[in-house]
Amino acid sequence: MFWGLSYTFMVLGLDSMEVYSIVALRCAVGFAVAGAIFYTKMKRVSVQSLSFSAIQGFLLFFIFAGSLIGLKTTSAANAGFILSLTVVLVPLFTAILDRKLPSRPVAIAIVATLVGISVLTIQPNFAFQQGDIIMAFVAIAYACYIMLNSKIVRKDSIDSISFSVYQLGFASLFGFIGAFAFETFTLPTTTNAWIGVLGLGLICTAFCFIGQTVAQQYTTATHTGLIFSLEPIFAAMFATIFLGDAITAKLLIGGTFILLGNLVAQAEQFTQFRTLKKATALDSSVEKAI
Image 1 (spheres, rainbow, N blue to C red):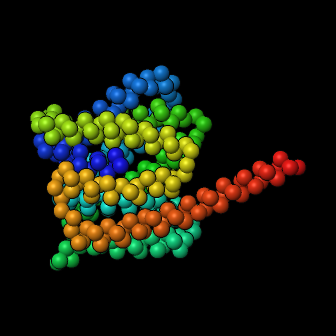
Image 2 (image 1 turned 120 degrees about the vertical axis):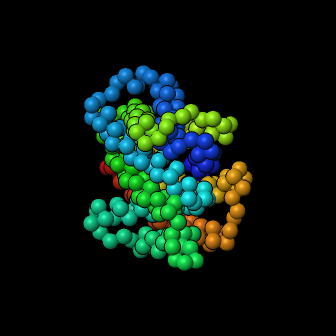
Image 3 (image 1 turned 180 degrees about the horizontal axis):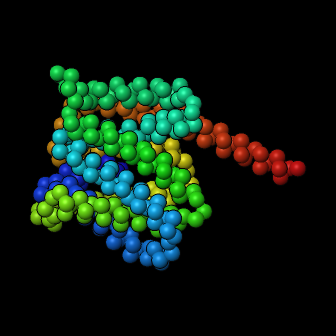
């Protein structure tokens, strides 16, 4: 639910601030709050963990900045549905890395998602909105972020909490560099902008990203993608309630295809997970019997 709310917060932040300034403050707030809570864990960090945090922090910076740039020329609802491509891209990239063709359900999900994206983004003259294209690249970056996170947090030498908190610190650093290099850095000057920045920092950054990183110790990258299946629905709902975005026929039709694609891709992974869990339980029972 909070992922979907992030688009509304981003639009509110853009009320009086530039992109990199929002990213810098969003991540600084998240880093400060999370760092204060997990201070004892922050003191015990390895060079390897900091290196991984810097890499993931740069990806977060790219994702946050790209989302804000995209939202300047597309709606919050559109952004939510397009970014949910992550759900399909994770199993697709996994299949590519494993050097095998995508399974039939994943192939069906890809086709359904592409149809949905086409309905959402193609204009009458067969042109694409710049914001929609940017959000598609952000979805690719997010899929890479999730897959890398899944591998990194499973290393015995990595503490997931300190790793995730330092990510926010590095993302904030990159944001400040961008703000001072390419913008005139400013604090929020309107109530809407303050709500947007604090909402992004406290709820959508400190809480959501650290929670995601910790949870990925106990699940796969593909299952993490399931979180995003409902994100576009909440994004559209909050955009309608708080921003007054209209629910158009294009949004309903395109969004339905994308959501179906997400659910088909995840249904297969859920089935495989259930099968593996049963097989593991059976092997354990046999060993005990022996």
